[in-house]
Length: 288
Image 1 (spheres, rainbow, N blue to C red):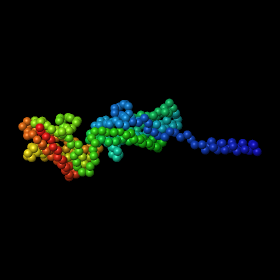
Image 2: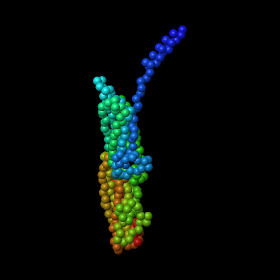
Image 3: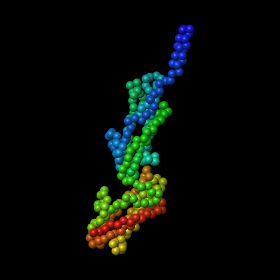
Image 4: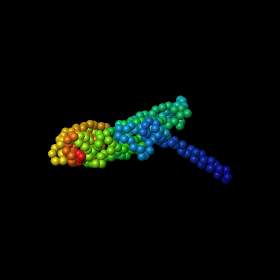
């Protein structure tokens, strides 16, 4: 009886050994990935803000890929492809995606090798402030697997309120053309130049993200008579890879030393040729 029991145990162990699963390799992974403000700089903090027109840098490593053994040597082959796409919160690409492949032959000494890749892209000039991401996709050709990862980053600058129709936002008077702070009280002296800036939003786009905008202005004196009439002050048109959220405008009005003192009223008219729409806004300034 004892010998029979031992024989059964041995058979069960042999069957278990034959059915034991093979060791599973680590899954495909994107490691040590992050966004940088310059090449090889530390990864930016969550509160860091890029500005429109900045370059955004990133780097990442890949691990857990499959290898193909060579029948007549110790050389192993690996094959990966990747795509890098900077996107807004809706998944719209900010710039053309960057793609590439990694193919190499590995020896036994390279079994823990994790290939690293770097990339960079230029932010659009007229992108609104908000939350964005770099979307990474890596595919293992040999293992027929893939993985994805999002690297978030923030853009500061102009905060745009979404509108369904043409509008003017952030209108402000300035003391000097290059000033970054608006005047709390838009008051000037006779002979000064009156500067103002604003952003146009809510316009329509043609294929290729082309916009066609124009604006004009009139200014009336304190007695209600015309001081300036410039119906065709500016015409703006351009196209871009990323659909622009706003287009900036600027105004400069020269005054004379003999200009009457009092309140002047500026009427700004913006036109969108693509969307066949217009928008008017009034602002007042004084000459004291």
